[in-house]
Length: 328
Image (cartoon, rainbow, N blue to C red):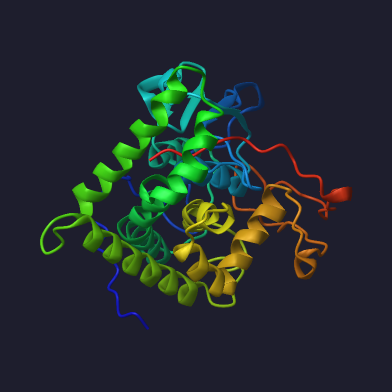
């Protein structure tokens, strides 16, 4: 295989990794909430989606997937302008007077509300989760940012006009360019040091690393439905959040997408989550089957998993309404 050694869990990264839940195998502390003290309504403000995705933003998509996996009752509000959200961070979770940004903090808050997708994981599986999330950020995220925001043909023909059409004037003239510059700066800050001195060298390296990461994820998933068996966890939410935009968005320059589509188990992984958890229609005849949600949808013992009946695809290929967008 590629021979890449997973990064240490202690390595500091710009995207906070999500720690495994306290204890293991269902040892979530605290009694069940009484009926008159149930959790307050929770609203998630995030970038929306297109191309059959509920969101194009990896971090927003990660939180949305985790909420689906754990059964957390989030009300999703799509936004057109990240400056209008608290702290200008996306995604943002609001519950009464509590405002939380960053995926790791949002997921930890959901766990405290006893919506936990990882309570059955062992200590080793929790450590693997941290290592693979660090791998995603180090190896795959730079190529994802480059594909959307730096690759000139993709940016000019898809990303910039798509964003500009959904951002109010006059911000539509400025904000896409600002996002592009921020993405390039982030890539150069993390990957532009010696011995890579030119942008061309950096671009070549980040795509090599991304393909290596995809190969490693494909090998780890194998023939399993999810990374730790038959039910999704935090790691599945992060992998889906990073892979789905690469897999679904139609770009003129698609070298990373072409490599991903050669790894059929990762493509099937994304399609299954979209079909089962987001109720989107799959047009591939091989995938138009009657799918049933797992009875043991991961959630803490205080909130029994919600039973979901067999999914019936919408007639005429109609999809649920998509949300809207991606930012670096």
